[in-house]
Length: 491
Ligand SMILES: Cc1cc2nc3c(=O)[nH]c(=O)nc-3n(C[C@H](O)[C@H](O)[C@H](O)COP(=O)(O)OP(=O)(O)OC[C@H]3O[C@@H](n4cnc5c(N)ncnc54)[C@H](O)[C@@H]3O)c2cc1C
Image (cartoon, rainbow, N blue to C red; front, side, top):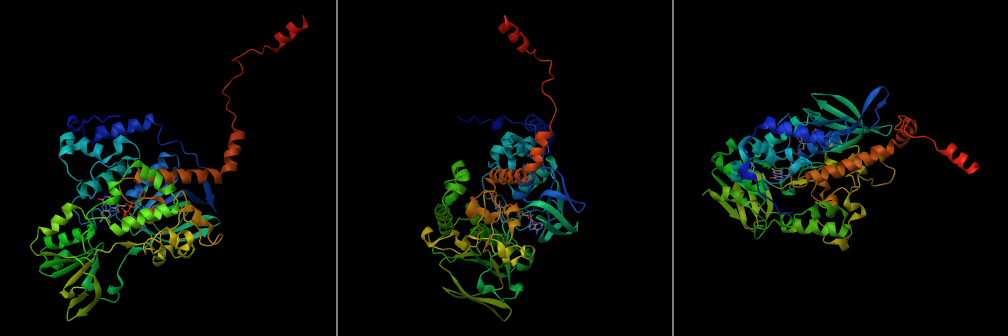
């Protein structure tokens, strides 16, 4: 089918018109589907069908898909205040999204739910064409609208602090704006990039006073860096965003300390992005999954050109390539960084070193962490390709993003805990972290949860089948011709 561009023709009809259209589309599609999961209580306490932890983009998409699928006894909790979920207006220090504007994101196949529909309804088609990349604040505004227009059951300011099991159910400890213990049949961990682990911090920073350094996702006081000598480690997008923010805040000088001999320049996985990758990657043999992810990790994703220019346009920014860090020490109110190019002295260091899958380090996962099977537990074998830390710790997930047990029978509830975050990438491909394929990920997740809920309640569904007695036929639609036939054969 050839594409017809109508962008320029679209006049801003306003958000109210878009919302009315969306409501009509949902009605045409009979969505949300009618609730079908039997109500459960335990000891007189209501049991949720699904609790979602995290109401960032993945948590919202998962919650929306659950509700649209008729799994309505659902709640999503997020530790952040409403409108501050995820990185977008907190530690994401880029000006615009890194990805192109035309991705469908969490729209779940509904055209009126796309960012583009939201944008053009307010500013029109010409403005859409003129837009380069989406300003990050606008992306957050869109996510806030997405949640509002779908009336999603999200509770903010509520942190999951612990997990336990109770008669085959999952008991989720919550704290903050709501406190206590919530029982649920399934739990979705949409906890983001630091999902199951936390910041990845290089060993050379162990023991260094935190007043001298921060991780790129920390809440950094950039004003305090005015006039200071700052080092940024890393060559990825976040290193550029943090360096640029420091420079714009008046840092005296910012040095990018980059271990590689050359900057990564080609965004490989984006280059081969297709529906084949989205739907095919998770069904590939493990060796192929490893090969794709290992190759992408070794070639690295380059920072966007605009983010790099945002740094290099400052005369007091310097790029040091082939500059590995050997050691870091405090010295008379400053940091001395021993590098492969010699010692360098700074007031502050920003480690843009990414995130880890080390779920043993997070107190809220303490009860399940020892039981979670990872790729290191036999799924990875050396004939698949070179080992790579950061990959082998990835959880070995089932088809609905559910954890698997390290030892069979040791923690059966894991089959009901779904890892819908970045840590799922090695098993599932990039469908539970980045914008491009989050709808496909939510679809895969919810199909699995729906199937599991249905199978667990199969006796009740069968009883409903046998008990169902609303007649389609009233008995007056036909006349029994048997007596007539008998009369004819008797003649
Ligand atoms: C700086 C940055 C920029 C990015 N830019 C892009 C981009 O341009 N394009 C792109 O495709 N991808 C981008 N990504 C990748 C990805 O799209 C984002 O990380 C996105 O936010 C992922 O959505 P999420 O829902 O998985 O996680 P998040 O948006 O991080 O949401 C997770 C939520 O879980 C909550 N949470 C965590 N633990 C708990 C707990 N115990 N209890 C309650 N709540 C909890 C957090 O408060 C948070 O709101 C970027 C990532 C980062 C870090």
